[in-house]
Length: 114
Image: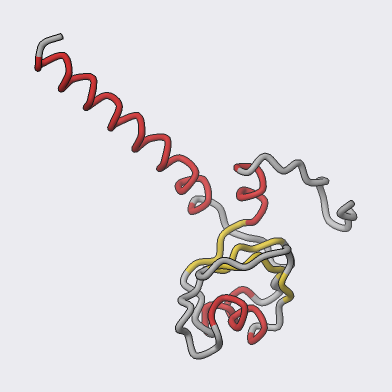
């Protein structure tokens, strides 16, 4: 194998890796969450409200999910602008996140989670 074909192969792997990593981020960023729906709230952990969980609480939302990440929490929020006012960096649609993770959720409002 010569140096030119190795460099071309390495470049191809790098480009494909970037596409694979950027696709989920683009899907998450390209949708708007619905008020009252599942939202991934991203906030700095050093926020005065107490990180993402504090932002959810201050905005009148409710945490869902078994765990918290340092910068994010899954929640339901009726007042999305309030979360922004309390320090949220991003509010991402939880349905898209569930789809990326392979979770099959019931469709429509009022559907019970089992």
